[in-house]
Image (cartoon, rainbow, N blue to C red; front, side):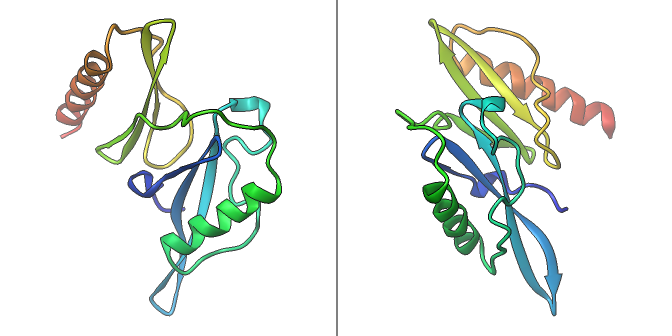
Length: 144
């Protein structure tokens, strides 16, 4: 699997649809997707790869396939956009959450949906993002 295309992710009815290039055939890209669920491991579709089993020829096409599958197999009713504060930095996905007046985050590397976030709370979204950026920039410098 190639890297997850977080920059093309789409939030839809409590899920985050994350496309990626599954493979190539005659120099044409074949797209697939993975899902994150706002209810986490309570969902049978959390961190699942392409439960529809259908592949697409474009990013827009695979997102539509994922949306149709979600519509047919919806597990819960979502109120609001759980994934609205999401960012891509150095091909990593960062999702910021607000709960009880504190901010925290999930951090997913480019090649997997394993959350590598540190258990830390922040007073603002900006403070959270600044801390993440400093940490990732420091890692990037050390790996050079």
